[in-house]
Length: 461
Image 1 (tube, helix red, strand yellow):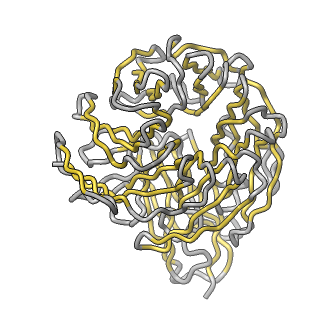
Image 2 (image 1 turned 60 degrees about the vertical axis):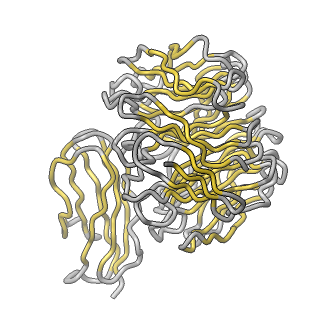
């Protein structure tokens, strides 16, 4: 059986595989006025997932520090993102800490907020001509080692090229101006040629399109689905395990969710939900039940629901309800908030101004990444500075020979932490500085010929 537990009542529902209990916890926030987006990552480098939100009516971008045990403390990044619609977090300036990127509709702004390393944020303008900005996403589109920004607004899909350096400037490059009422844009290698393509949802144009990168960041438009009615958002994930990114999108006006199977850049439509939700707005693919396939977490705003669709392993889906109290649900995300190996659910709802979370109390630990990383990445070590040990995390997008090597200030190799073939996935290794002198060290991740990234760490004895 499936149980939905809230502060008010207990519902018992049937499920079709292992039992999962989602416990509706105390809200993370009830003052995110007209909340539009929720995101999660480790903001403060303490190896647990914090939560971020964008809220429209109070123009706020905030992050909520995870203090453990389901307790969160709000920190405001800005209250000047006029009509905040979306938020994303990553290291934009390659200094080892997490910065924040936002899209706001009323002031037509795409901005990034630079973390000074002490979680104080300063705003930097990327664009103030992003009319009715809806979506923002940061990815290394040109393969130069830093994060670019992809945005959807008005009828445009635009990427802003990160020029690098400690205070990077961004150069605007328009991909298309013909994506009617552009709602969402995501980046990933759609055709397996090693470069990053862009996928977009056209709410007004009733279509899903992708823009093929020719390797020199010149993009040509291709069709995912010409008749994808009112796609409110989209996500990318390899649903069938064939090595190609598929597209998942909600049809808002017809109350459906589809996934589009990528058959080497030709797409075949599959129905996930037909009428089980009223006004679906957001989808997030993740393995919620630990059975090795991707389920779908979803929000729908007209019925105030957060739901998940259980994948039976053959991409047949059964709907289960997590909450019916997310009034005007706009966004969902999944992350392990308790450090127990299980992905919990998150939602942002505009009608009740809430950022909420739902504890996944299933019996077994799960691969919380849910899907394989779309891009390789090296993360900042923690703790930093350290004495004598520290942890280094990295992720591998495609199987290859992985080398993680530590160098001293003279460029001499002092530690070889990893040197072996590794499959795609997320990894953590320990660095032991016993026997090394105090100072600044460089650690470099090299994955075959496809990726390398460098970061610094400090050993203080």
